[in-house]
Length: 321
Image 1: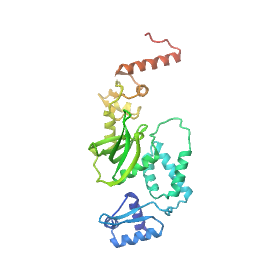
Image 2: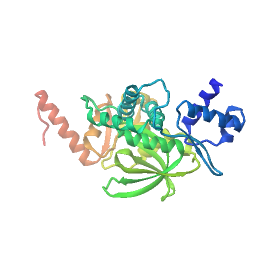
Image 3: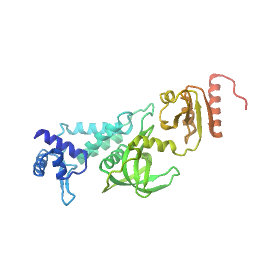
Image 4: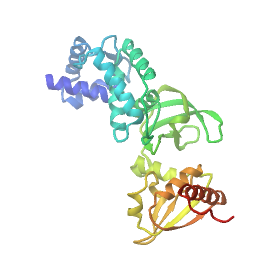
């Protein structure tokens, strides 16, 4: 029975709601046994709610007391703050931290949520290098839950042109790329897949409306997002033909994805186009091999100015006008 109870608790944490027959089927017991096990969980302090009606079932809700996770209040607050921080900026463990954060915040009592928020907003640290994707932890947690539960979410979104419009979408996946987080979702109004930058999303409101999961084209969310980002329009064009293999360039650059295309075994094409000139310069400087460049005049002017400043700093001659 102990093993079954742990399995039941684990199932309740992976989905917002479960029907009695679904749980009975997963646990290979009767619906009556599931009802008794739910009563036992409630006696242990887990806030299990029953949902009445034809589509009713069970769900693990927020309670007035922290369930017996072998954590005291201080430990629970410390873990929640650490997970929020990790989910918002530590490269390599964002997705794992986000899944754990969604589970913990689902059952975190309200009296502890205030302490977590206070700590999160009052603590500060020195960041010497901004190498990881950054996002608001609260927004990440909200979107993670709606992705998990296939719940339609409404929010305001600011476009590249600065216009803010209300949007309504079916969340699918959260994907980190470089210094940004993206929400991959099916836009209800456009009836198409869209990428939403998290730093442009405000006032997210889960609607409570569930939908069936949609298969991502190609069944690979990360590859789909990479392809969309590579095809996105940019303000400045810069395409380099590099005298090195595509694999060589991939190991020495980051965030280019499908913008690196092999030409031969020893050459490749790198699309360094971007909205900002300094980022283009940094990408080209990281190639560490010879290349020819096809770029807009603004890009070429910026590269010349950068090269002249470097020469002046080294005491070299200035290039003729």
